[in-house]
Amino acid sequence: QSQASTDCESQIMTSRELLPSTSSGSLASSTATSSSSSSWKVLKKYPSFRWFLLSWVCKDIGDWLVRVANLIVVQQWAGTGTALSHLVLASLIPKALFAPIGGILSDRFDRRKLMIVIDLLSGVVVLGYLVAVYYKSVTVLFAVTALRSAKAAAYYPVTNGLLPLMVTGSQDLQYGSFMLNGVYGLMSMMGGLIAGSAAVFLGVGTCYVIDSATYFLSSAVMTFCVKGNFSKKQSQQSPYQESSDNNSSSGAATEPLLNRITPLPTPSSGLGGYVS
Image (cartoon, rainbow, N blue to C red):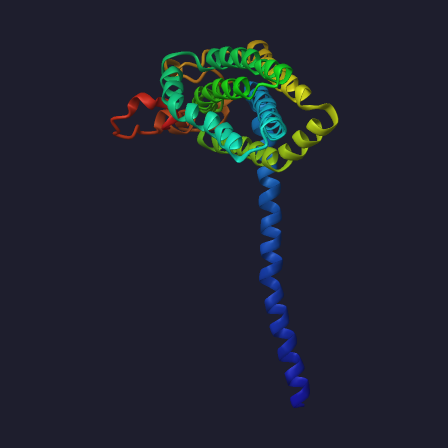
């Protein structure tokens, strides 16, 4: 009888231990399914955001191609730690200097048009890498890297400020931000592999050409596929609200999240969207 009682108690304890894990697994599965479903709904609801996401992917692919190609070229031409440190400085210093300018521009002008102009300029600047490859000049490589980094510093405040103007509603904005971060995380995992394979099989020159092409493609997408006025003056009325009226039963729910964010009382208000 004591043996039977012990076996019964052990079975009860085992079943109690299994129940929470089973329920938590079901909860995690249902949460993941709900998240993917909501993300898909956001993509269907905001066509402009779909095209913006595509241009974001193009930019990330090009960034990784240039990073890997630059490391290979500097290692082959100079082969010293000093040259690599100069490459890093040429990339970081312009970002620190030009980031405030990007915030000021994004506050004063239409962010979509700014993105188009920056993409076009970037596509031309990246072609300077081909000149560096032709002459095998590390100096030209560093100069082009500095120009490209200055462009990137102005680029990020503009693109980050576009999202709240394209996606309205706090819930939709959360899923939109989630998808942008997901693209960034995916490219962080796969970008190096793709860029390394392209550099080995196609050559570093081809990597630079592809990077330039991604900028021109991003510019074309934002020009012909994304419509609307995306300036800060229009933030009171988001330029793309084709389905926002179906989202809520109160005025606060339909108000874009950007309008409900109280600006921080900081003297560096000139940084604009970059600080935000």
